[in-house]
Length: 477
Image (cartoon, rainbow, N blue to C red):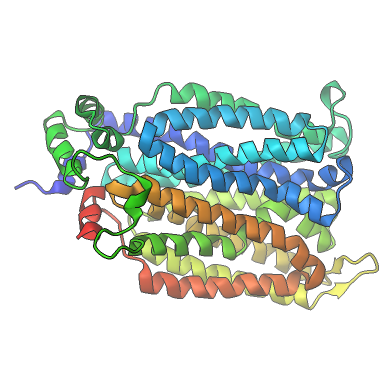
């Protein structure tokens, strides 16, 4: 008798189509990364342009994250109601409007509004892209294909760093005039409209998720999509398999995250919340959002600080390819455990280096001898561990660990907490930097890396090679 997982095999001639569809969806990850990284090189310019203090600057940077929380929450729920594709199209439009508005803003208020809209798009993309890819991909390569999102995120970050570095270098600084008499920092934001336009056009050519179509009762359309992805003689069987994990005659809704048997939140939701919170509390986005500011505080010039961002972006991209190679071979859980310890060690070294550094007259740290080199190596080692473990694997897990009946709702809740955690870390870092310094700040993040290791060891169940329907039945039973 044929194993159920065999029904998810894809014909060789259709594997290219699966990769194509996954890549189109993953452009949302590129925009996620670009939108997150572009702010990095504009922090000082925004402070000068809007005459804001440390708190105001922190909010200008972190405001996007409020939109991300809303986008993740409502995006996941709206996708269950209207489908993955239409919400992704709305997301693409929001990226375009936000990119233009951020660069054209003449005040902090307008800038914050544009960034919140962009954040809504990032948040929606962060939950819909891994959900869509996991719902069209066969089990044996689902991890690698879902990791495409993280690859596109880090490529987006890298391109943003390269773009910022080149624009600022050509203009002579982020606050200097560039093309058309507009400041360089404005063009840093406007560049994003190009990939956002490609994302919108690409989405016009992708089909709806077959699992959403089955949940919505559109069985003929679901069959057509499945036929385009897999063996034709298995489409009916696959539809029945998906239906077995759904409640009859009822579409998924937010309340499904509450167990009918206990009246409490489903335990798997708490696991997802732990994953998404710990990914942020190890401080990765402090490096991405405040990289230039951080390295200037450590005594580097603005030019060298921006160059360090480019180096970090390269490391991030390179080691994400390592994740793609390992995720479906080694598995999710081992990589998460390795990453948690690796990040904790690298952060601990940074805490020691920055905590023992001398303070110059201007308040910046003075890294003596080879300490600057060691700091660079440790920081990039930290990024490397994140890039092949927690960066992509968390999104892989979130895209596949929840049952069909409440995948969208679970992603909405976890996405909301993910971005609120991101907001908390981003808003508190300038305060920590000013009050306790870089050393103790990194010590705190290192502590969360240790907590993450034990959390994964205790609560994470391996999902490698299993069908979404098999996992759905295990949780529902």
